[in-house]
Image 1 (cartoon, rainbow, N blue to C red):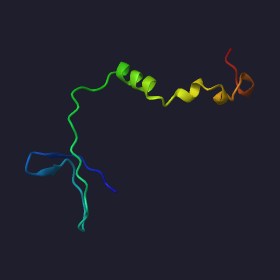
Image 2 (cartoon, rainbow, N blue to C red):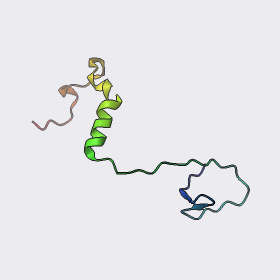
Image 3 (spheres, rainbow, N blue to C red):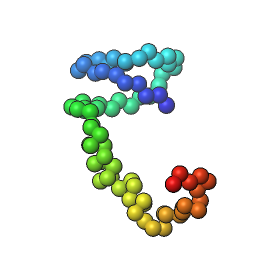
Image 4 (cartoon, helix red, strand yellow):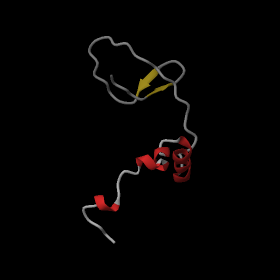
Length: 75
């Protein structure tokens, strides 16, 4: 599978990079909404906190390491 960014002007699709395809291929065209602004560090931090991907860190069963597992202590 190959993904290539392109621009659609209402009539034609123009690939942003050269693609060397020698045989007919089926394609999927996905139209993306433009991004108004790039996310800030605060936006990313909020997404991480609200997303739940790090919730396992609050589970005591996941706290399997102790200071005794350290090879080097920097205290």
